[in-house]
Length: 95
Image (tube, rainbow, N blue to C red; front, side, top):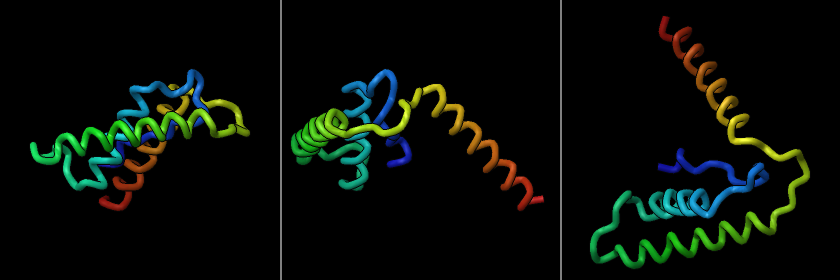
């Protein structure tokens, strides 16, 4: 579940509200232990997602970046490289 939460701080262009809400949804899913709440918990679940998203946006607005901004393309390339290296290690250990 939480593997979908991505770093949102210090990006150019800045993280969007949709990205913050997606991260909030993943966080609440992890804490609640379910991907879809029951009807009895749906309202509370959605309210929690909205509150976490609001706090996330506020946090991102207030954080101070000391390094150069990241790009989504650059981060995706790093992720692909990490995956490639992981696959190579797995092939070596299974051979």
